[in-house]
Amino acid sequence: MRILIVEDETSIANFLRDGLVEEGFAVDVADNGKQGLQLALDYLEEYDIILLDWMLPGLNGIEICRNIRKENKAVPIIFLTAKDTVDDAVFGLESGANDYIRKPFSFEELLARIRVLMRKSETGVVVFSAAHIELNIEKHSVTKNGIPVELTLKEFSLLEYFLRNKGTVCRRTRIIEKVWDLHFDYDNSVIDVYINALRKKLDEPGKPSFITTIRGVGYKIESDE
Ligand code: CA
Image (cartoon, rainbow, N blue to C red; front, side, top):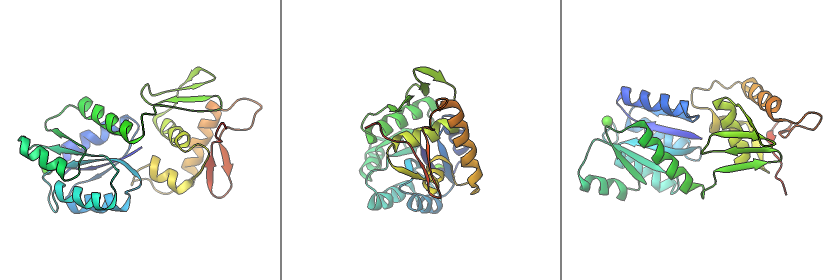
């Protein structure tokens, strides 16, 4: 899952980025309004949520939000705002944001709101499964034949992406866009390393891998039907 943060205060941006990366998200940060809008529009289909500061150099958060909404009605947007009057909050929501949170806020509170919005946008699914594998988003756990398996954050994100797209071919470029961030230097071998790790941890001995390689294109997890 990939998140865009548009925030000009470096300390807040870094705090959010580090916390969200620790939670397993791929995170991009823009420190001004123009760059924020540009990234949002360039990767609109890739972002699962956008965190938008209100007061920004270049373009303010309201303008960015309106521009994003012209292109994409669905991506959840949360305003991070120091403004604290009711009128301002209503104005923010009317511009198309889904929620707002007042600074200073705790990371836990923000994370809870992110999870609520993501659940809404994905119709409440928290458990994904295929064959002998089950992944629980809320518990952040994975089991193989009912037995817990330890995955790294990136392995977990990659498996989550595959399971969300069960039955369809996951192209390598889409995997990179969804699971890694802007700073990923395009190196195919990195994906291979993670695929191999997932296979090693989750495949059943003597059986074909649960992740099928589609040569030259990407990977696929078969649907159960
Ligand atoms: Ca600001």
